[in-house]
Length: 614
Image 1 (cartoon, helix red, strand yellow):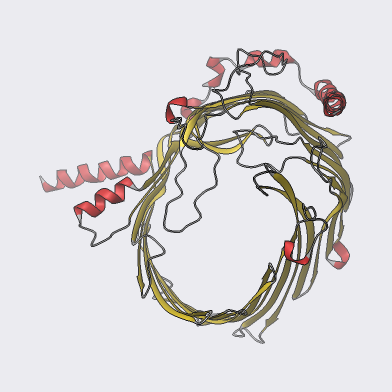
Image 2: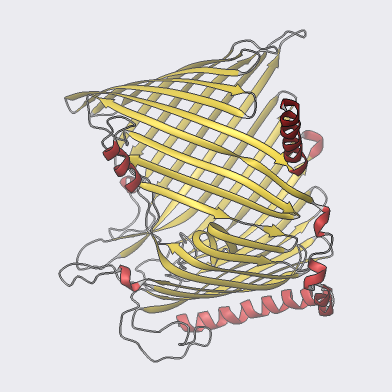
């Protein structure tokens, strides 16, 4: 039955793409225009640009951390170097970026050789460049490229890539190593280093512009098998393989109706070493991806239309992701989900009110293999209102996330749909003082509520301890002087987190002052916050102090320093503990810019000084 639904879905998606493609080619230019993009024409007017120019910046950051009364929660010493430089040669631009970060766990002093050796072993490196000229662009090193949301989107790769956009034609490709899609280490003690052990190739061929376009995308990725060691005595991680074919397109009719759609088919092998099987797949031929017992074939699609009128818009969106759909070219997907939504937006300029609304239906269990199917109404909206010195906004949304968990050894795994509901209200009011020397007073308030629940459970209907609730409220006051005086802020906040029958309340107050000194060359700021956290078994008090200062020097140099102190007293179930933490961050930045004429002037000045000396 699922195969029949998939076939019917593919037919509907094909019809939609035929309409988009036909509209595109009906409005497209003649294909013969490609002939004007000859190599000789590509370099026309090449020498009209500056023979040489360079601009960018280099930064050095260091952080020292120490804890008193308890074990360290961060690395004692971390440093990083970053650079963003753009070189240009006539009309060729070569932007370059680099990030190098390292840390050591047992820090004695900066000149300790053994400490620096460990520091370099725990390093994070990103180096890349993206030179471009007219419609030719290259990517070298650590880069990111976007092909489509369902195939390859936002993944950092280590390799080479290109983007060619002669006229309405566009060709993009990349080849290199991509990171393993695993949860990142959220502990502050470790640097989040991505392991690049997957080879990937992605190619996109398209035609069109911002009004009408169609693209065909191919993505193939595979784990390097030599990175995996099979251990028969324990659960082993097996190499995986993936191939995705995608098609996306968009068109605009009557200058007001925009239509867009995307569909993708993914073949994913959880174990590329599993025994092969013989079955035919037109979109995923055997000479590209080896089919075996662990290979699954899934489809994902999304699309919609939007009509833009005068002061309003409305439209519809559709999204469907088959159970288990994933691609190595994206970090995460909410699979086994189907959404059908209608949306509208209204802008009432006379009363400074803007409203956006969206509502629809959502369901899961698309292959009908789960014990329960969740069908729910999904809604989102936001409203913004402004009247002279008063502004307010309200937002609401509810959506679902997919979570896998093991219930018991007899029941392998059960998919739980976690429904999340968010509401937020913000308001601000500004009072302007009288006269030219009057200060500005700004009062702002924000409150938000997030509720997470599990609509499906093996134990039956939803209960109160299946989810969580988080309430956050903040009230702040800012006094901004018109001249260079002392600026100060005061704030109060409240947080409540209810999870599994336990309620945690957190109260806080804070105050900060800041001022620019020495003809605005020095920025100085002090912040102080005090928090009390309480529950049935916990009573905790924390005092945070932060001092920040920055110095801007002539010639593009700047130095910043931040000192942070945190003192915490904790009483949990009668067990008392104290902790004091200190962190010192130093930053040095240098911004520079030069071109051919400036460099030539420096040499001429040097030659003149030599002649004068003679």
